[in-house]
Image (cartoon, rainbow, N blue to C red; front, top):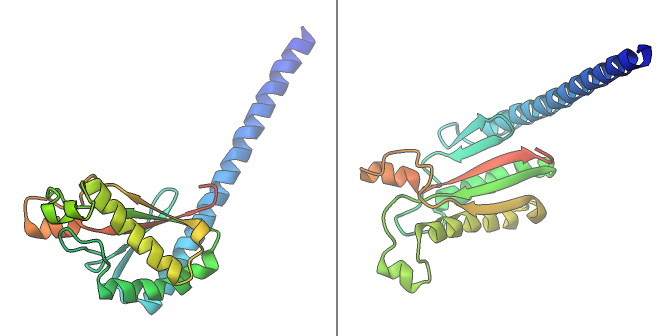
Length: 185
């Protein structure tokens, strides 16, 4: 009887200890991500105009959006010159964070793919968004971002940031966003 109670008590102590340790790890990850966010925010805002980028702290990542620059023309996937200049400034800022994984996420509006794009082998908004993301990823690699720590993914017309009912809203939805997450996050 005594050993049964001791065994239960020992298990409760072990479970409580594991929960506390897990909480500490989560706090450490949170603090590390917050520190990375603060550093990135400070460094980028000192080198890139505040009206060019928006940095947002998410639960397990940091999202960087280039305001009005990484917006693509309808049916296009080549980066505008302004976006290339801004990303060229971002690459050396990201270099010290080479343990950080960067996800390049491409999006489109909801306008159906036209015959011109179909002749080029792009048959869906999904494929177009993938080309946008890949184009940005390849440019970042050419500017020194570690290729093993960057990936590209297209989401097509999913997750619009504005209504597709107006040309202005459609333009806002033709975008690429960068999400930075620490290894293991």
